[in-house]
Amino acid sequence: MKYTGPIYRPPVEADTLLLQVTVGCAHNRCTFCTMYKDTPFHIEQLDQIEQDLREAKQMCGSLTRIFLVNGDAFVLSARRLKEIAAKIIAYFPEMETITMYASVQNIMDKTDAELAELRQFRINDLYVGLESGHGEVIEKINKGHQLADAYMQLERLNKADIRHSALLMLGVAGKNKGIENATETAKLLNTTKPSLVWLGTLGIFAGSELSRDIENQLFEPATELEILEEEKKLIELLDLTDVPLYGIHPTNTTPIKGVLPRDKARMIQTIDRTIQSSSSTFLNQALKRSTL
Image (cartoon, rainbow, N blue to C red):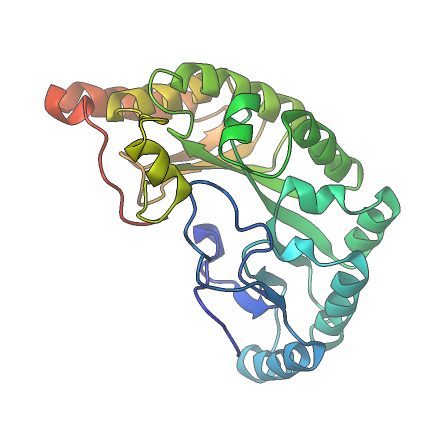
């Protein structure tokens, strides 16, 4: 299997085969991100993809799920995605789900008819990097879309019967703005109904635009207490049915996971216990995080 540069995949896809179809990230301009700064974006050749599928067939025998890498593989045209999906299905006719990372802009670039066709080719589950549901925050971190776009494009996925996981970033709004960010983000999720909610926490990495903003006093990171309160408020406000929520990323202050609404109270209690058991020194600082 060929892999170029750093490879990232959702933790819940730890046991899923990774198939490289792009390298790097087509957007690569989010202010907080350094994941692909040294990896020029390009599209993998179909011949190489087929060679990898032959190898995967020899290794795995059968597969029902596959994850396409890299950073925003849904940037590929609908035509190219259908070509890749057709090859996957040829090698693995039992395939049920072809999944990958996507941006709101990637969805915007597909027509309704193309989304419906991709669904027929078993592309039926996307991890969408939203980070926030707050319009100002989305603009400041340069996600490449407006808040109204997120509402519209996620609803288009729903109409096409393509599931999506909402990838969010605690602390991304900065100091004193966590509750406001949680409130606006809950509105987005309650309207667009993701199949899964994933929570990570903002890290400040050397070389990122955000790190320069901090040096220039244009951004002040949230404290650990603010981040925990933001997480708690978001969970309180979410009105989703039978939706898993994972807050188990290594960047998070305390790991939580459960299914909404069943485990809402238990997850909130976990956050409360963390706040109660932590020192004021810890809670009133912004910890340095070393990984995305």
